Length: 140
Image (cartoon, rainbow, N blue to C red; front, side):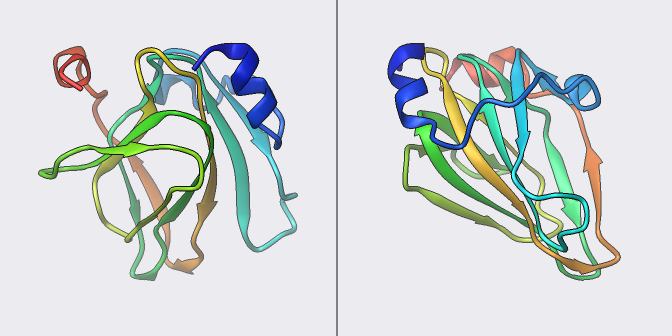
């Protein structure tokens, strides 16, 4: 999907490049927080330029926790460790249980956007792991 069509679909705004999380991504991404820090539920629109993806990561929780992705615009990928990748398109919702290693990002030739929802839980934390290798990504 080209940038012009993507911008028409991406109704939640682009936000800014996040220097804080850049070390956990390959490629350029933008982060647009949709809730403020006082809100008990964290929602953000995450925009990936073509080919951008985040590192493998785990949303740990003693109970509850995890992440929900609501795909908004463009085309992307989601993959859990040891499972086949899932193609993402607008309207697709991915519920990621706590303690599951996974990654997500744009397809090679498309911009991609999803709303990321951090699910509340007990003793939650995020563990960032290794990058998704070019070898794995290029096979998609």
